[in-house]
Length: 266
Ligand SMILES: Nc1ncnc2c1ncn2[C@@H]1O[C@H](COP(=O)(O)OP(=O)(O)OP(=O)(O)O)[C@@H](O)[C@H]1O
Ligand SMILES: [Mg+2]
Image (tube, rainbow, N blue to C red; front, side):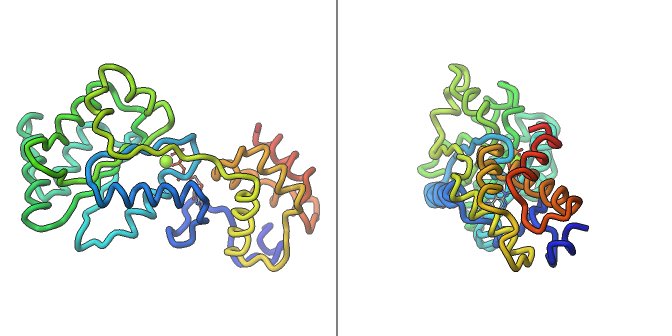
């Protein structure tokens, strides 16, 4: 294994990283700040970014930072959950037995959210991920479901998350009712060259590296090829380490990264 060759105590760049171990990139921190604003003001926010930008992990870190006595976080990724699963899942999470008809289900959910907020002083945080997959019908239903216009303040936090196509979808005329209600919108950027260096070093340090395994030119190549998207950085770095191990390279150079990029079809 490359881990023992590079004297690492763990595999760096694994898919799931603990929230508290995330690299504090500027877009990660900015997103946390925007979410904190949304937390204080309530209502609907939108987070978009390219694939592998770090949206889901940053949202997970935000949810983990909330006091469970004051917030109840639920997460639904539309890639694996159907719209019906979402309504029913939300109802179950609010302690309801879901009604059969959609109108009844919506009323039930709204009453439960209101009761949770006003009665129990708990704010639900609902995250809908991979929402670029949503139909127009679903987006307009969301507008209805989360319409508490009789109240002076919103009794919930709803985060809509997805690829940049989501933002374009919401800007279409028929989605204006929902679009105009967004209290916060944020588009995640890729990591800068300096941040990519910091990101690589951060992960290598977490894995117990005791010398700089990636050369400066290797880091530059990773930054260029990945355009700073964390998932691509992870894939490139891991494949470079495997390649370096096979070739007996103690330091990963630019050439190893180029080979890895070819292998990954990047
Ligand atoms: N700030 C960070 N620190 C450490 N690892 C990160 C950071 N941001 C992203 N990652 C890692 O990059 C990978 C991709 O992140 P994530 O799944 O959150 O992206 P995404 O924007 O949700 O992508 P997709 O649109 O494909 O769902 C994950 O393995 C994650 O652990
Ligand atoms: Mg994601």
